[in-house]
Amino acid sequence: MLVDSADGEGLRPVLDALAAWGPAAGAAVPELAQALATRNVRWACDVLGSIGAAAAPAASTLDGFVRGLTQPPRHDGGAPLPNGVRRWHGAQNAAWAHWRITGGSKLFLAFLEDAASQGLGYADLGRLAELGPRASRCATAVRPLLESPGPWTRVQAAHAWWRITGDTDAAVPVLLEALEPLKSGDADEPCRAAVRYIARIGAPALAAAPLLEATLSSDRCFPWDVYPAARAALLAFGGG
Image (cartoon, rainbow, N blue to C red):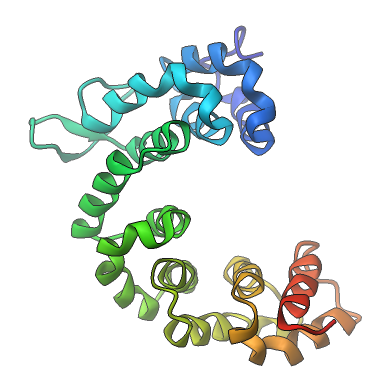
């Protein structure tokens, strides 16, 4: 399918599946490298990054995308780079993939620091969380987003802030607030993400325990991923 439909939008679910496989998709690296010259380039970047070191043959191409030295097909211009070229809208995907493949975070951090100076989006926050303390120079740009009007951005910012700084005092209240829909038998995307992040934080988020216990014992039908995340959180608290 990668060979026969490399430029077709119908290939994107296949690429999503390969990204979920991670290193197990390593045999497809040659075909994925060719997909970097198609309209599916952004999705191919995500797969290559999830594969990791085995995708090393693609690293130089990704480096060129991030620096603006080369452009993928159907390039949509964003903010101009110092060399006058407009950055590809998927440059973050390429920068992330380059880091995951090479293990060197310098290029990725430079990209995110530049993004931080212009205003971080929720996708940037997820990547910053992955970097953790290495992204400390972006912390000042993350902190105000804990009070963003958008619940998804607040939750992502809280997780990134905790991963970067280790500070739970500012992060946990944001995540606890995002759990409120559980009280009415609902669980939107920010709420579900908050449950997962609380499970990672563990004991400092113990105040979530009663609501999570009530959720697990409720006869309401929540999205499937709420249940394992809630159980993981309770275990992390030292209960359940």
